[in-house]
Image (cartoon, rainbow, N blue to C red; front, side, top):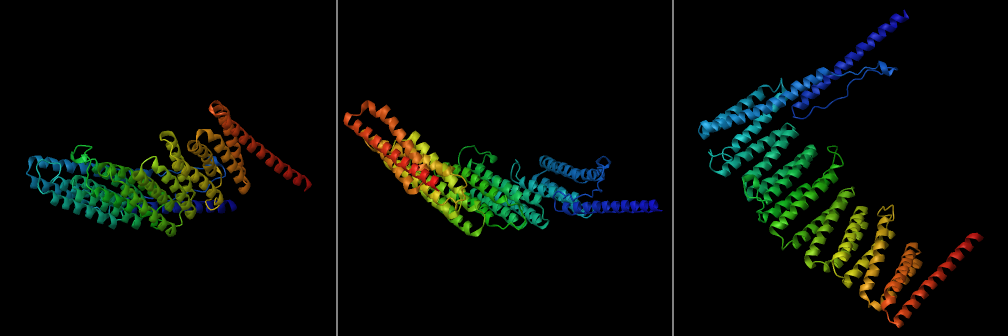
Length: 558
């Protein structure tokens, strides 16, 4: 009797498992049908998994071969068949163009497309994915046939380019409307790409560039409404690519490459692209897209904007770019302040602040050239450190440090010494090191690497500046004075790093004294240098020895 009850319960359990498995499959098919209407890949819900047996060898892996076969026939062949139909009707249109007059051939093409639209409408309920693919192919064919009314043909049906461009714009607007209505990212992507292609086909400054701007705006609208971040990033890339092609004289339409398009509207359109895609940091996520889209968009927009800006400057503003970079610096600086109070993310305002200071550096260079601009750039470095403290951003500090080291290396390697530049670098290194040590908690700096870089820079720039400032017979005395300065700073600040810098300066002075001054200094200067260096060295030794002994004795007594 017990065995019979166990068999019945086992049979009921298996029956319930099969019912649940059937429910999973029905939900999966319904989800695929619903999503296919919007032209997106079907989501894959979790499959029912039978309870695990205690023995792993007894577990079975269930593979839904019927579902795989259904996907291939329903979705794969629908894509393939629609693509073949697309090319077939395109070839039919070309064939009609050869053997019929222009208007009649166009009517043949539009008639075939109307048949495709009707077939898609007729199958809308029973074969939703196939209906979607047919509609998508029909929209592409309408664009292609309309394009051939004027472009890429020897027999123009409509000889006025403006009329055909207006018709193409209408086709794109219809596609965009249905993309929003059907919530189809794929159809929206095709509409945006056709819009950029139309801008290049038009080959007209006052039509092409505004259309590219409108494409960027529409992609941002779709991103805000639906969270289509992949479409937005793709459009961002292709918008800047289209601008590059335009700046290279639009070789798509057969123009010679390299003859730069020199219209000032190029700069206005470039600023428009940068402004449109800079809206992303102020858009609330609301679960529509990943958090990583914010930095990805900012970086991609910044790099693309910079690359195209170089082409614009080279094509039209090579002699008057100072005001452009000054304006970029001001706009980015104000926007970084806005983002600081608008968003809790640290990277977004920090990036625009960094970009602002980089643009300011270019403007400063254009204003006074090198090496005179370096002292202004070094003082600007102090401003950047202050900005980093306000923003609590170690990213700004790191980038500013790299920029400072780059300026220092370029100046010392390729340019003659200028006293005001030398001491500007000394002051910048010293003040930056002090500020970073003073506010390292605010900057969340966990290591001393950044501060050590500035201290090392201070050590070498101090020696370099004094060497070029004073007459050669006083170099040893000036370096010894620098060592005294470091010793005093170590006492005031109670910081051992300045003590090590003082010791390193004394050793450098000694080496210079024996290997350089010893051979050419007069006897009086040589005696003075030796005595001064000896007094400083012995005095520092006595002081710190006494201090160490006192500390040791107090420690032993306690």
